[in-house]
Amino acid sequence: MLVALLAACGPTTEVLTLPDASEDFAPVPPGQIEVYRSPDAPRCEYDRVAMIEAQESESVGLAGGVSQIDLMRAAREEAGEVGANAVVIEEMGTEQFIETEVEADTSEYERTESRKQLGQAMFLAIREHRPCETDGGP
Image 1 (cartoon, rainbow, N blue to C red):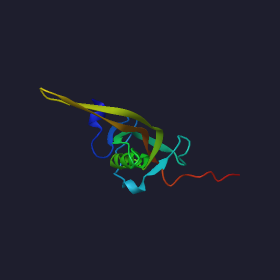
Image 2: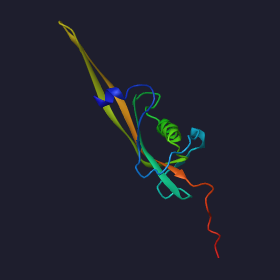
Image 3: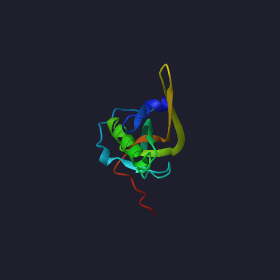
Image 4: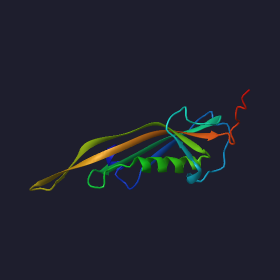
């Protein structure tokens, strides 16, 4: 079951390098990667490098469940590895569900339920052409 695989510590990620990524770029430290919240936000021309999907499943309790910051952090790490210097959030969301576990032996069984939250995000990793060429105006 997919949800069981996501219960590991921290977000899991999948990276799909895009066919139009024309060159191999040097890795970029995650702290230097910009995060844009919409496709219109990048200020420079850019190359599309990869699509990154990040997922995390957490128990919902006093700690609050899935952190969007953790999903962005995981995406920035992956983007840096493929040489992107920015990511654009394509979509991000969470949903809650009840996970049921049943343990049984020959004479009895025990059923436990826990409230979980699944966070999923999709990012476009880009390589901006920096410094940006600015329009000098009239």
